Image 1 (cartoon, rainbow, N blue to C red):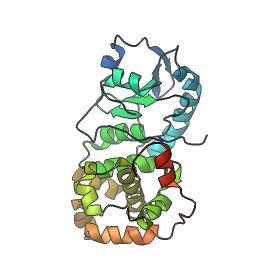
Image 2 (image 1 turned 90 degrees about the horizontal axis):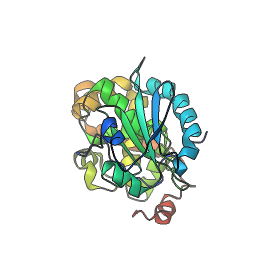
Image 3 (image 1 turned 90 degrees about the vertical axis):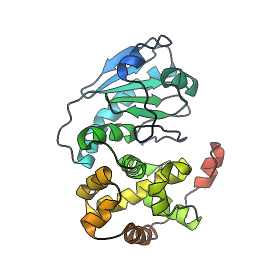
Length: 265
């Protein structure tokens, strides 16, 4: 199945100060009459009279199919905590449920994910699940850039573009944020830059230096570059920039997509 990653990213998750409700709070919301289905690793909650019910079978297939690969990506041998996925069909219903308008959110405290599903946006992807499992297995994430980069890279693409190709496109457009600034002020910039840039940066680090360094960065922040590699953040940034230059970006139409979906580029 082609991965349908969030086309309009307004994601809030554990790396932000905001946390969506727990499963029990969501189930007690009087504005919703939940139906439930289950697979080996997930409980699914949806409104049977909404369009989300039409996506239930594809969602069950997708998430069970991807689960093993996600554990492998995170170096987790076994994960036996059942995850909870709530599906709603509009930003308005999402706001009624969790208090904000967003396409996706996760509460790692009890393994609960909220996704938007309608004819325009189908929020498949490992992003939110990655946040939950990483948090559960590794503990608290030090900085947003590594948490979001890890989650973006778990899907391998952003807006259906390969991460290094998109990063090279952003480099050519002069849109990349200096990595030191990305690390220190992640939330001061647009998500359509910070998320794919951090995804590409984390992809490079993971492939070049391995998962153990990713775990150290996750727990300690960028200081792990110096402690583990005896290299500065600037050294790693130069390596990454030299790597992404190798990737073709001629067919990327990111700015056009942003305009189409009403997102400022």
